[in-house]
Length: 374
Ligand SMILES: Cc1ncc(COP(=O)(O)O)c(C=O)c1O
Image (tube, rainbow, N blue to C red; front, top):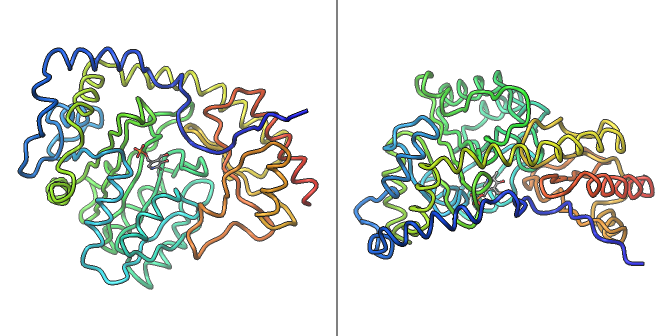
């Protein structure tokens, strides 16, 4: 009998979280109303994105549209910001949470950074460890994912956010906060975004990276940066030297869905869709694996564990695959100078696309594999 594989792998939205039919209707309306505009080049000369889209994103985040820069997905925002912030530095140091989003580390390294990990705790980056690192060397920037972090599910506490912003001012480094999951909160109170906290602290510098991928559609490839107005201007110069602008049609679609309330509506819908999957996942991990999770996530896509095993990670993953489990290599989420605690493997368990029964089946297989490897 073939066992159906349980996929604890990619963090992509389930199809039912993407309002495709409604997006298609908005697209048709734009194509009927203004084909000439969306099939022409966007205006050049430091173009920071579709005017209406920047206004809508400004409203969504309560920031001045002059402070918004639109990108092709937030991955491009990471790439442009790395190019911008690392341009003059020789072997620049970048600090990240350990674990963190693996693609971000790859992007920073491609721009010449030496990426170094600071341990992540259940309530955010270890600020004492960070302070020690800052005393020794001020990095080009610190990259954090403060809401329902990918891969761990951790949310940075309000206290740690305030301290991070204070440290940015004291030591003079930029913080990149990446917030694609922020709207997907299933319980508790949302802490203040770092970008907002920075406004009240003289000398603090925070650039915020957002995305419509998890609240509307990843296929539109709409990401953005908000920060002091000099940043959109600098990024526009970089963009103009390579790809000019994101596709006008896709930006127009995004603007229209924001203006018509589809994004807000979809956020509510996705929260309702994912909340029971989240609750089942939290319960299943606790019941089946014990207290091994890094935190109890309050939103987003991920729960994660440090699972005690005696074998090495590669052997564990091979054994798990033979048991019908597709897992992402957890060590890949740690920068080169960091690792999960000795005697454990780190596992990210995305719950957003699995129904409760499937998730439970998956963690039971995981428990059996861990027992054999103990
Ligand atoms: C933390 C984080 N940043 C950025 C991205 C990339 O998103 P986008 O589709 O906007 O490029 C992801 C996608 O999973 C993510 O988890």
